[in-house]
Figure 1 (cartoon, rainbow, N blue to C red):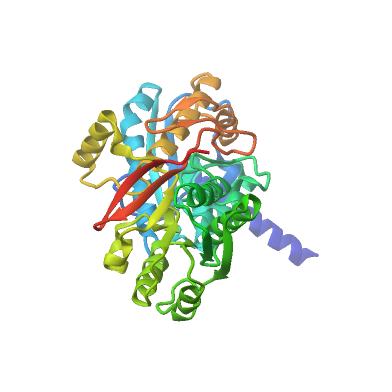
Figure 2 (cartoon, one colour):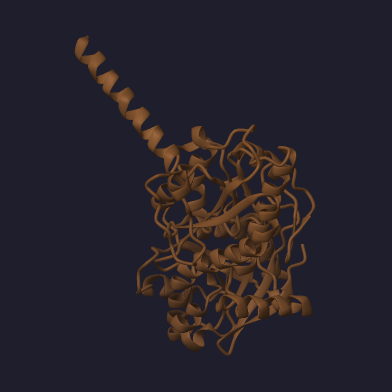
Length: 418
């Protein structure tokens, strides 16, 4: 018993020392908006218990985390979303200074890996100044991380994670600005039937949350509507370089269209090997194919590939073209696949934080107050989209668009009509 009391006493001293160290060094707990991945500072807070109280005075630091793949094969998605989020935040810095707050970005790399996503989420959670997260960018990572955010009451606004499961599990802190897979997948099936006149369809996926979720929705819509024969439904293993077995199967079935739920790394290989085997039908996917790397991998075989996207044509209007010019001039970066989604996701978050500040009489809000403010967003006009969250956290105004590759370039086709 005495030994147990001794251990308890020592543990208490250790906890007290840690708390004092965290309070004394909070000024050094800064994020980074330099565009490079930032490692988590050692002197961060300790989760929900360290967040600002409702009675905290006006002023101080507010940090918004931006989390997605900044390295690995899916880094193009994470980098472009982060660049858009960073640009939005930098554009609002002066507004928040007038309210008495220094606002900063904390980029984190989850490598599009569910396990790494949890680690990145924990890093954001333990920084007491982080009031919300723009992320995660990919579905599997977002779903895994959302469990942590829900436990700690930290809001996440996903710019591009489309998986249905993300907002179907009843978590109170999860939001997204993009369309869900059931919208993208089902509308892709309708487009294939009505606009591409497909009669025979082969559905393929990469056995991952994003890709398989899309494929399942395409399959379900085809079976519901009828008029299109489903001649195959198979999964492949992501990361492989030789898909000759499934390619031979597809060629033998002679479908009018192959729908692939997955990313450009596998999509590029598949269409290239299909063309080499003599396949003459169409190839369709979703925004996982939206990358310059798709063309680099597939070469001329990429021409004619169609894909749906939750992202509209940013440069379709004069205002959009002006924004693109300003963005590229000010950042030295090209507008990429998820730049606009990252931009509007961050703008939505900042709107929520600003509303929470107002509701808290100009004082720094708690994480819970930010969550409540985001729940009330029902008609926020971002730069490229309107945002209104339903009871699940989905955007009621989200849309689906169609693109295709021509001569190595992506070409905007139009909005899918529901």
